[in-house]
Length: 200
Length: 200
Image (cartoon, rainbow over all chains, first blue to last red; front, side, top):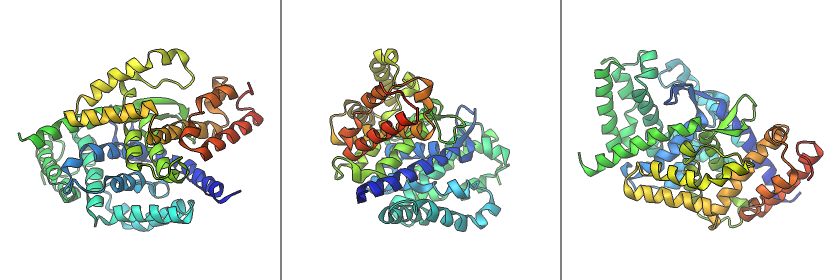
């Protein structure tokens, strides 16, 4: 087997393994309300948002390819570590450790250079230091907000989330996009009026 | 409302509308066999494959951003037009017309410049003339083959598909990647041996 085929075998094993992302359920429901959203389809939605909303990014000249790669990779660790609900403080305690282990196992299935690339992309997303990762994170926060708002409060109501929790959770949106940050503040005011969240 | 907010409202309406892609079911099952795959998660899988398998593309120096954009957009038309099963010759008769209408409605929700961009990406994918679209199409064909092969024949068996149908359907894979084209031919030989498809 030549090097190229050897690499291909590893890559295909990884591609089959990550099919599991389609079974990791999020708290949010899809908009027809028939079922909970899974991580794989959520990720697709974020990539589409990244393309469509680019002009609103803090720096619209940012590297969109890097944003898309980061998004496509960002939830893979949840295959092993599971989805930690945004407002689950207990779950957040060991989230980092669980996710690092998952990253090592999953990305470790790939040839070394690709393992390093994916690990780099995932860490960049998590660290929120670059303009690309700030934009990617803003979208990741905005999407469930849009869903909750357009599904009559959905998980906000179910878990009794308050406006300050939502605003705190979503303050990073403005780091990636000022106009989206403004939009979120308007949405939260409207959500209070509609009774989806308590003002607190 | 300023121009930027006006654009944002249209963009968000589009982003909510395309959530429906998560309800369009394909023939293929996800690998745990619990349910059929939907278009949104399928698309995510293809984008991950595009990143991981890039070195095997006919021209590995191709524009990966363009490939990703094309993939992210390529199935949206199925929101209105539905998924046409790969071996459904009747369904293919008016597929083009149904899909063009869908593209006009969906992309038409966006500001004009973005409508044109998405229409261009979708047509580029469909026409398979550029090196990027050939690679994107190769992945779109390869993924369900990988799934059928790794799910004991799945839809091949169910619909009594023959090896020549599979090879014909998948000859485009070699246009996007020689090594993936070879891989598919090996997989088909093995699928015949395993009894997943009839040699014919």
